[in-house]
Length: 513
Image (tube, rainbow, N blue to C red; front, side, top):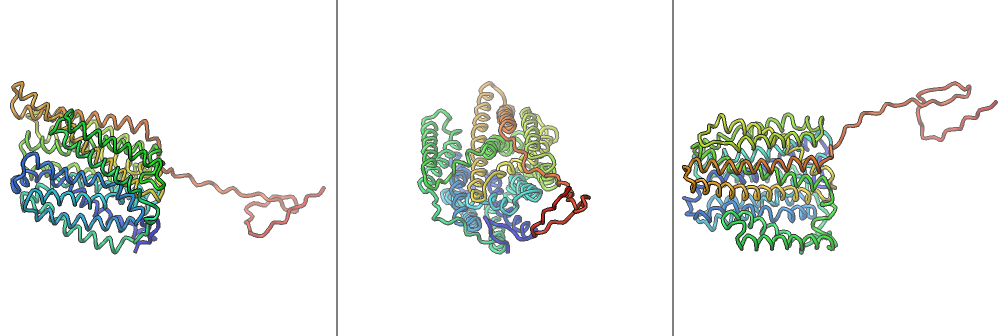
């Protein structure tokens, strides 16, 4: 059993890594669910009779609940104990997955997906806080973050493959029901391996008014973003709901200044490293989500791949990410510092997205997609662990859950915002080209090119922000100081070296003549 101290702290190296495996298993389940659904969307639409507009809510319901509750779940994890929040989240997510798998109507599936988002937020919000408590510093922390990041990054791309394979072989229900054995195993392991931490206690205050404000603001903001493509960015609902979301966030900010026990302590936002890392992550993930979702559409609609082949086509990216993160990124981070590794990774992401921006209508997978997969896989494999380490480097132990929730919120909001913007640009460009007389494939390709170039621009801004804001190089290994032999004069006046110290008072030496 792992002893509790500020979350989870292990007395032995073996138990710490066992606990990390459990945390990664719970994370993998929620990460897979974010991408496994995309390939199965056509099958879900035909199976439950979704309208084209209603089908988007299979994704939107999950995103809104997940993003809206991350901050609150992170703070509650600090108060009631992160293990309790993690285990409860696993239970909610697993039960909701079963409800998704047995849904027989569109309304039932959307409601179950919302419940899945709640469970995912509860689980994900506290994981990073638990991880940094398990591995306080040094090479082990770099390795642990690399493993955790590999699971998250590779899991997203792996979900595309599993979604295609499971849907083709067993039907769309299986993409949800597969979470049942994984969730039960992770739940049992978490109860056995992770120690129960008491947290700070609800008496410290959860700032319920602030929680309502920020949860409403985030849910409404994500809802506005994901619906903007259909409604139009300048439509009355988009502008109205967007303004209301900003007002709620402003009210939340004011509340945090005057609340006795604020939900989001101002000192977290004053941390240049944490705030900068969240901004860089938001921009980087916005670009990568464009590749993950619109890249899959390019492979299917322009290159003509089916669901299974599309999933297989995405496999090089998670393989590169996994090999790099598990084998090299921790060593590179320790040797060169997280900032240099992050900047190198972002430069590769910019290059990959820029290359994808020329994806032609008559392109081939080997020439136009595979090189991009390798570039983006390498770039993300370098950037994400370094960025995660920087984000959590200066966080106090009592703020671990909240900082973890904040970091995950930036990831979800960045993905939703980036995809909404680039998808709208791609759709508008496609319509424009169709109106100009281009054939359907050429028009689709032109729309995707604009989206990928926009994503490359977002990655450029992320690179510039990282260079300007993230100057922390992380923990440095200090060279051991050479012990200097002390010289003590003897009664004869000759020096003696290396005399051991004792706890007894030393008699002063008297010099005469």
